[in-house]
Length: 453
Image 1 (cartoon, one colour):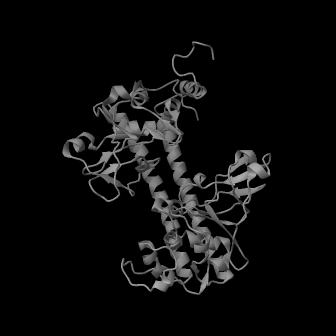
Image 2 (cartoon, helix red, strand yellow):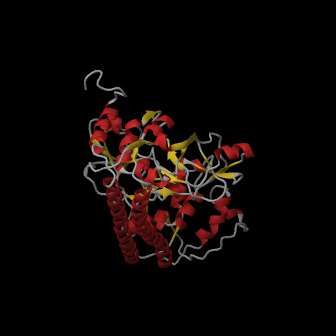
C-alpha cells in the first residue's frame, strides 16, 4: 500500500481485513451505526480472584461464555460488600463481550438473562444499550455473525499470546440498524433456527451419553452403585494415592467382573523420539493434546511439522493406538482417542499414555470403555500430583486398573453398537450446524445486501 493511504493501523492483518470489510459492507441496507452511539453504559469486570467454595455471588467468567451460548455448569463465586456488588451487578439485557481470549474466541458475546445477583470478571466487558433504539440480542447476533467477526478480527491485537479488544475498539464496531420491528422479526427467525439447532445437539448428546450405559451393561458392570461418601476400607486395599477420591472409587473398582487388569489389553509404548535431533529435515504428523477439543470423537486436527520445529521428546505412535490423556483436567474432558491412519510418521505428546492393544482386545471397544464416566473416575482417582489441576495418571497405575472379562467377539459387537450411535450423533450435529449456518447467512444478507457468499 502507498505511504499515507492508511490513517489507522498499518499491520498486514488489519489492512487485509479492512479490504474484506469494505467488500462485505459495500451495500448495507440500513445505516451503519457505531455500538458506542447505542450504548448507555460500558464497563470492565472485576479483577479480584473468585473462589471455588461457593461463597458470595456467582461470577461470569470467559469460559462461561461459549461460541454457541452460555455454559453455566462451572461457576466460581466472589464475596463483595453491597457498594461493590451494586457496581458490578448484572441486569437482564446486559451484553457481555469477551475482550481477551484466543484469536478464534475473542469477541464472543451473549446477552445476560439470569435471575438473582451475578457479577462478571475482568476478561469481559459489559455493554448496556438503549433499548428504545436497538435490541441487545440483535447486537449480539450481528457481532457473532461472519460480518461481525471481520470487524472483531480486524481490531484485535496479539498481546502475550492472547488476542485483545479494548472498550474503545468495541465502541467503534458498527452494526446495521433497522427499525425495532424488523429487528424483532429477524430475531424471531434466528431464534427458531437456534431452537432447531439446540434440539439436534441435545439429541446428539443423548446418544453419546447412552454409550456409557451400553458399555457398562454389556460388560456386566453394575450402574446403580452407591454414591455414599464415607465407608471403611482395609489398609491393604489402598494401592494408590491416599485421597478422598481414591477411597470413593474403590467401590467402583470392586464392581468390575473378572480378575484381569489393563495390562492384559496390551502394552504401553515407552519408546521416545526427538525429531529436532533425530530427523530435523523430515515431516512428522504431530498429535497434541491442546489441539483436541474437549470430548473429541476423533482426531480431526493433526499438525504436520518439520522435525526441527518440534521440541522435546515425543512418543512414536501408529494407527489404532489408544491415546489416553494423563493430565487430570484433560482426562476428565474425555481426551481419549484412537490414532488415525495417515501418511508418514506420527508422534504424540508425552502427556498421553499410549496403549497398543493385542489381538484379544478391540481398540474401539477399549476406547469407549475408558471414555466412560465410570472409568474416567477410576483413572482420575489413581492420578497423582501436588494439586488437582496437575494430577497425572502414571503408566503403572493405569496398567493395574481392573478390567471386565469380555470375549473379542462380544467386544466387537459392543464397539459396533457404539459406532452406530456415534455416526447418528455426528449426523445430527452436522444437521444442527447446517441449520444454524444457513440461518446466520440469511440474517446477515437481510442486513448487508452486498454480503459475500
